Length: 188
Image 1 (cartoon, rainbow, N blue to C red):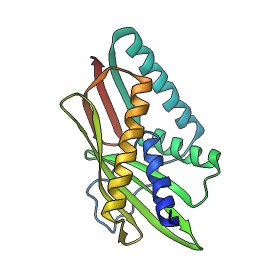
Image 2 (cartoon, rainbow, N blue to C red; image 1 turned 30 degrees about the vertical axis):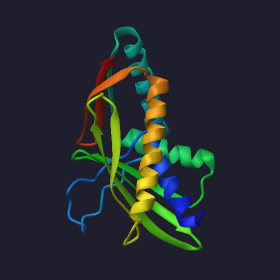
Image 3 (tube, helix red, strand yellow; image 1 turned 60 degrees about the vertical axis):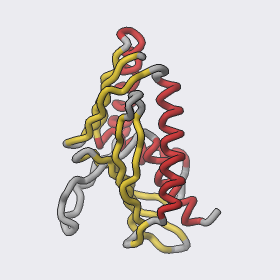
Image 4 (cartoon, rainbow, N blue to C red; image 1 turned 180 degrees about the vertical axis):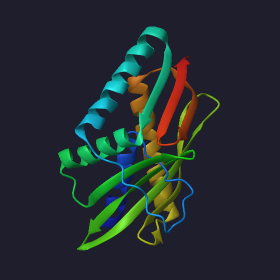
């Protein structure tokens, strides 16, 4: 397995750590504002998930909202805890219906910006489906066959995690806008 493939898989697995987002339709010359990283935001995400899970257990309804700061903090701190080398400065943006994950990829003494943009659709059975819209390392697009492979793995990992946390959930809506992602649903 090539080093480039491993680095890209690592970046995409971070997205599975519960998604990422898009900077929106800003001009390419406008740099994205950095999303702050804090242990408080990561803990807040954990508390939000636990509260949502408890509500689901009691009422059968899901209503979960997460923010860019929570996701960025979780991804950054998870990378730090795992000692993952090769990926630095992760950022997660949730804008305009898209999840965008950015960061710097380091390999063989070269550092390049990486960016992956995803959208999430809900199928007729109420199951979310991640679709990678684009993936680049530096100015180069990631080959389609690699993107397809990663997309398949992301969907499997995401659905497995969803099934563990909320079996028999039907996702009614998933809205990504203005720095947050809101998921609503109910029990089958």
